[in-house]
Length: 320
Image (cartoon, rainbow, N blue to C red):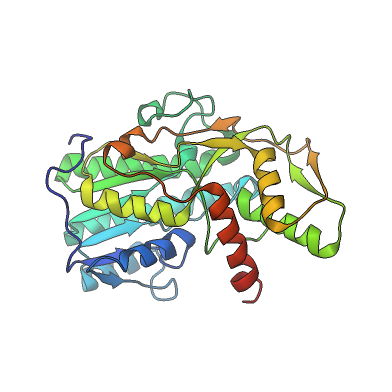
């Protein structure tokens, strides 16, 4: 029940490991990372099992009997998508996590790791945000539906741990980016959206491109391959009811980020601001002291990560 690291590490060797949502950005990164472990992957497509359907999840999990489960599967999107589709964001995420966590208990899964999001924290939380500020204030209105669903997932893991002794843990990643990201401007997060805007502006010969808001909010970013490494580290070394922040421990303003993206892309024009659009939370920096105490730290710098992400965008995404 404690929030401490495991006294005895959980071994993935020879285990059947299911990555729920293996085709997503985080799921794909976990698949790459787990190739370093001596374990058997279990994957299933949406066409085979719709995770919002309890009967389908129960049937499939009872058949394959995973030993360990990672749950990155979620409906995700940026401020625009959260604002337009609040019902889908709360309903689909509640169903996915409820079905997987409850069924994991039923079929005797040894260990489960649920992924939340840094948006679970109050809008005006002290910075950097420690795990214990959860539920101490009002949420950011632009994504409260998604945040509430993710908070419920944390509480599900805690409830099953408390009542049944299940070794279910939760990780709260910061803003992630990297290989496999979503570059659809209608639904993307900030880095791929900025990267696409800068790329299109350069290719079209535009003198400028516009960003939402004032550019002043500060955000923290972590490359998805670093995140996957942290999650595997937690699966092996952590067992506790307290959720754990997964981030870089550093932040920068959206305008500073935009300048970095423009440099990587090779865009030399102006960056304009649409101050009529919402900024969202003023600052979101998470404390990663708990994760560092487990012996993990990020390895990929933001500059390096942006460069490799843009290379993937031009070499793979645009040609796909």
